[in-house]
Image (cartoon, rainbow, N blue to C red; front, side, top):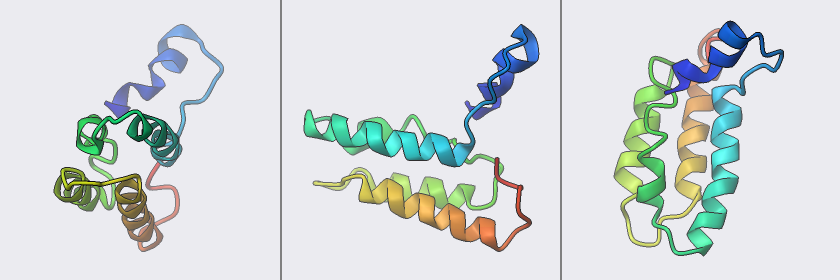
Length: 100
């Protein structure tokens, strides 16, 4: 879960800052592209990131889009892009900085 993203900095004096949820989603898109080329189904990957925006504006929409569209035959990274865009639109209607 994303809640563990800050563990190294808090407990082990790591100087590196954790990636934001948006950065994680963007990196996951690149990862998914490679895995799709190897024949891995999108649904098998996206189930691991359903909770990425838990408790954040747009989190439910993120989960719904991924849950409904990832299992479809031929689903590709456009599903993740759509879900991320939905989160970003929700973010713009909330205060800046609410989504880390």
